[in-house]
Image (tube, rainbow, N blue to C red; front, side):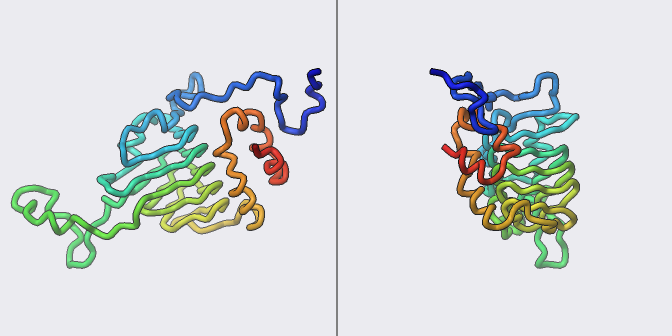
Length: 228
């Protein structure tokens, strides 16, 4: 006997209803909105790793993300962005290749200008770096955010428009300003630990589809109860 939909729990789609998850392989997930792209099917650089359903929104050319939004990326440091992130227009990731020497009288990178100056290329190689730049899962950045090299942004964080992120951002923190500072935490520490343990972004796509309402608008208790 099939149960009535009226008996299903809050936020849950009936198990007998066909589940059709969104497609993580399409470039433009929103019909008629060419300004929005999923980054995983777009990115080609081996130095950039992006999780499923992370998108970038730009009215000009979102498909140029690798060249316009990831700057000075010569390696070996990597840019790692998690799943289900929302990146606002003009977000910029400054990579370690932007560094200049600061231990001498001039910071100017003479060797890259060519001529005999290039004989001194060793002066600009091996500069100290902070490692990979890592953005967690379910992170939302506003328009015009700048992320400096080696920063780690935690899961569930929100970065306000125009912020310059120079230090690591805690999980589920809201940060803003230049330099960005923690404005508040989205949840108490004990609830943040529970959210990290649930890690809904790693659920199977069908299970996420069944519990979209809980993921978006439910309580931590309800999210835990919905975990597979």
